[in-house]
Length: 231
Image 1 (cartoon, one colour):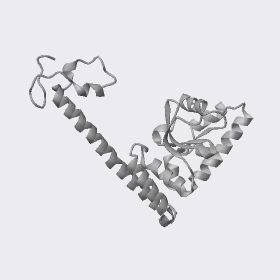
Image 2 (cartoon, helix red, strand yellow):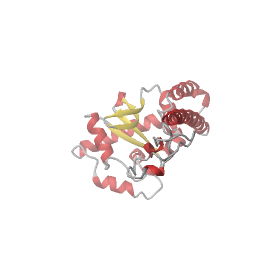
Image 3 (cartoon, helix red, strand yellow):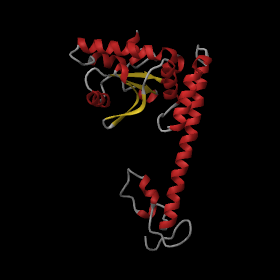
Image 4 (cartoon, helix red, strand yellow):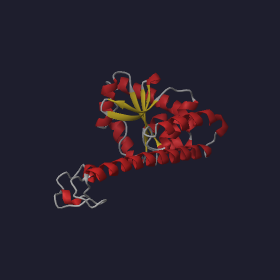
């Protein structure tokens, strides 16, 4: 490090701030990363943090626009959702870290339009859930395609979340395809799925049947997830 020069000003370098990004290979030598003098390192980190914030704001604006565009393709009167869209736009613009996808924002718009109280990206123990709906003791997880093999309660994450939440709570997984097709029915679907899961638990000593879970992992049709409980 003593012989290295700052990438910005050329003065003797003592810091490698980019190494902090590498959480998997901590044993990689310092010489693999750019070196900076203390002043330039501080300026670099400040600019990078500013760029990250700007990126998050722009990304959120694009997600909001995509959510509204998705709603425009659904069998609804878009004017009926004006207030919900305005509320969602204001909230996510001020809290750009509260949604990971346009589908989560679309789900929020649907719930707002139904007058439902909920929390986005809520902390439950050590975990963060997509949407927490306290009024019906339900966690709504908006699942994309990567969740296709993580159904019902056969994964440790859901079990830990339910343990932290306590008795009477349920986790409902709705895939993005369903939300993109008919967000108007989202809240109704959540309540129906919740009721069906509660019934399954009552009939199976508080657990979702193992066979039922395995069956859902290999559906005969493209449909998968908790939406099967609507049938």
